[in-house]
Length: 249
View 1 (cartoon, rainbow, N blue to C red):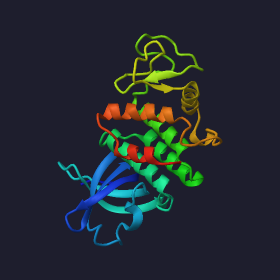
View 2: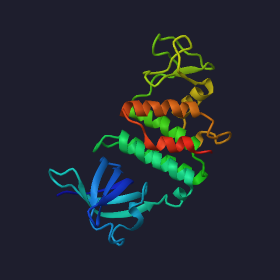
View 3: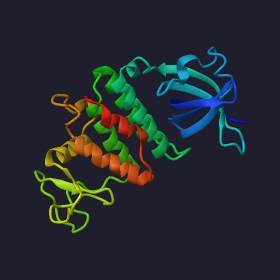
View 4: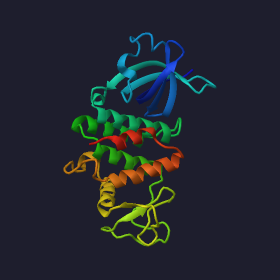
């Protein structure tokens, strides 16, 4: 059984039998993987707080031939975000990030850009104690890296260009954005300012996106559009999106 050592982000843990845990993690070199942490529920000496959700860790694990689950040998904590998650809004945001990663990323497929995106967004939330700008950035790049971000300045139905200052529209069943003539009933608007923000995020790192003026309302339409793109791709609803929508600020 080959031993692997890698940086990883813990996505989720859940009980296995009386003493063990199943750990879902995103490794830098091996992608989203699941493993068994033996005796993790009974003793804290071996893994300690390193298995907390969204901890940044260094893992050593064994690949087990013909088995889906790897066997975790040790787990060294590199960064903990536990204190940040004690804030309710940040905790909901982190739960959302973990759910998107678990559902969106294919198993055992390395994705270093996505790994770096998660760390960037989590560190920004920890430093600023604000969630809406980092979450908008996360949604935008999650959709972009997954490869299903549609054109932001062109109607997918008629092909007409949508002016930078104009609103575009989208519907749950749409494959992209719609112009005014093609929007139909029951569509949501995506204002020009929000599309401009998406273009900014395409070219800038998260710390370069200005903090001023951000609230839950800013770019809410962009997050709704991106969230719908994710759910359409997954063919399921994200549980944590409901909790995000219920946050006041």
